[in-house]
Length: 105
Image 1 (cartoon, helix red, strand yellow):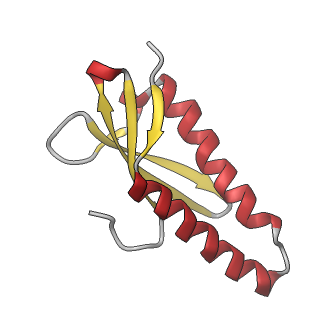
Image 2: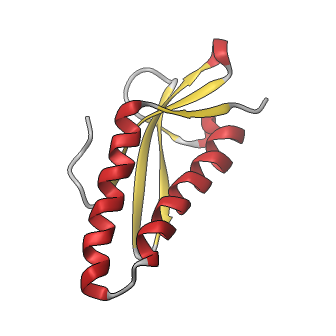
């Protein structure tokens, strides 16, 4: 079974926030492609892993349909919180954060 991957409004806002943060850092390091590469890595990982094997990701709480995926990027990476919606065959990404940020819950 292949799942459609959808992004909640909150997750989209998280991506915007993370992109802006990377752009700010890029001004210091003079690597403006870094922000775009980070965003692309998040979307590619989500589309690849979550669409095909969402159950392989670690559980996030008591409900086995809420999980999180670690998405490596550079020396750290990102974590996405998602829910498997079986009836719709959809994986809904609810939140994304950088691994060094405080928890999103």
